Length: 61
Image (cartoon, rainbow, N blue to C red):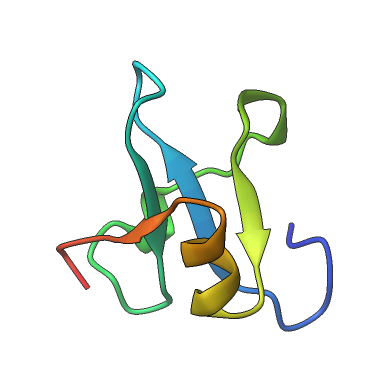
């Protein structure tokens, strides 16, 4: 569940923790992406927030 209402951007890290990728609703992998906060993943309200913390937009969007 998102931290705040309307914050639907999922910030996800790959298995080795090196790549930070964010997914928007409508991205191919969005519905399969799980945000695990204990691994450094996060929910974002705006793309700019994700980008400022080192996440890049998924290529499947």
